[in-house]
Length: 282
Ligand SMILES: C[S@@+](CC[C@H](N)C(=O)[O-])C[C@H]1O[C@@H](n2cnc3c(N)ncnc32)[C@H](O)[C@@H]1O
Image 1 (cartoon, rainbow, N blue to C red):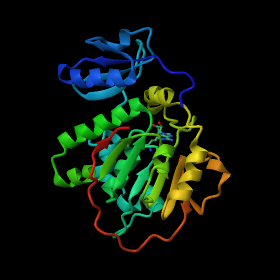
Image 2 (image 1 turned 120 degrees about the vertical axis):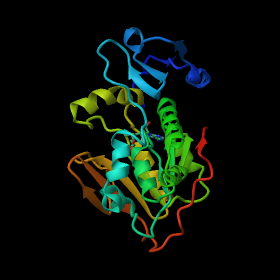
Image 3 (image 1 turned 180 degrees about the vertical axis):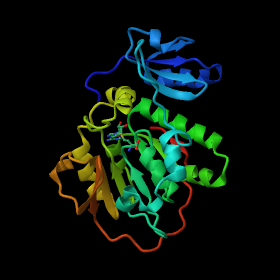
Image 4 (image 1 turned 90 degrees about the vertical axis):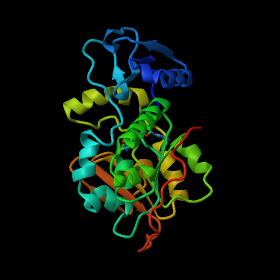
């Protein structure tokens, strides 16, 4: 959670988004400003900016880095979707996706939805849970824009597999009736994003969300609920969550996956179905 609440407002610079912007400001209980340049705003830390390119989080001030939005078709995520390593990627191996095996993934730390989208594109049904309302709004906007832009039916099917929930992950786990196949956790860690550009752009995101100090509890609860496995993504040298040793680890250059295998995944799975609900709020 953020150490102290950042000073935030919603800015609407796109007439088509006025209703959504007003709704967002109401939910966030913050000011709504129209037709202003975020770089000129001095007494705010960030704004949630609605413009022709969708919703982004933008740091204020003259030297502010670029905006951050949830992107699925363009940018790095879109590139990975078109040219990524498919089921050979470490994330796929960690979750256990392979031909014929498509576990339902419960991602309790959705963030900007990049990992969840990769796993949906590999065939998994994915439930994304995000507790930070500004981040949830970014994610909802990114998914909505992707659905509008998706021209090919394969991409539409990927997006149909994604369900989005605005809730705390622990609360969501406590209310579950059916156990999820795989729970995925990628809590915030202070020293990630080494590249200068990424670091600068993600500063607003990091300050907004803060540290995820309850990540240990999330792991312990997930271990009691998941059907087959729990997967935790961590920076390569970060300590284990809850000091719990995983069954095994998959390490890359900067990241590692701690895999807690609870039961063997079945060899065959029913064809992945589309999620029933596209977006759900608390
Ligand atoms: C590092 S980001 C996840 C990035 C994500 N894996 C991606 O690919 O974009 C962590 C996110 O988890 C969210 N989060 C942390 N703990 C949570 C919890 N208990 N319930 C719901 N969301 C949580 C934070 O608000 C933050 O947005």
